[in-house]
Length: 109
Length: 114
Figure 1 (cartoon, helix red, strand yellow):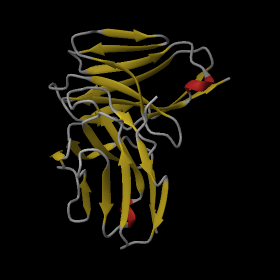
Figure 2: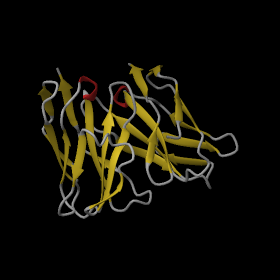
Figure 3: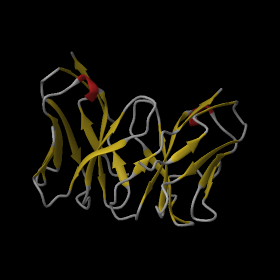
Figure 4: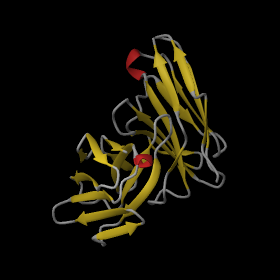
């Protein structure tokens, strides 16, 4: 399967800070790039998604930045809160989702 | 808000035994997926259904895994015989259609094979 590489593996941020998670993909046929948030014991939940014809998408405190030429995209969480502590997965899709390995985010009060 | 239902939440089984998981997707969702999530990794697709038909089972270990969605609604994933390496979270997801509509995941079945 085509890979989606995600970094960092874990991230610790102070409350109010900015959390940044990066992903790189290989398959140029991907046409949909979602981010999922997963809390312990729960299934992943769609957080925000972008298509490659857009360079940035913002929903509340969450922003995706997309660089098609570099085949990279990132999630920015502004004003990070302890409730944002979860594992975040990026994915790419041309039909089926290919997930990254996840980033465990801890937001310290 | 409608949810994808999965049962059981937890399953412990011995190696070489059979095990089955059940999923009831959100009403009206024609596309159903089974994913496997190994601890510390992202979900990996096992099988995708469109209504009652399998559209992708390329990553399903067919010598021991089987999946069905007989009436195009709920679905069952079976493993026989279970192996130690099958210990993982098995997630079911559904979507309105297969073309990049959002996936809604259930809370999964945590399988431990001893």
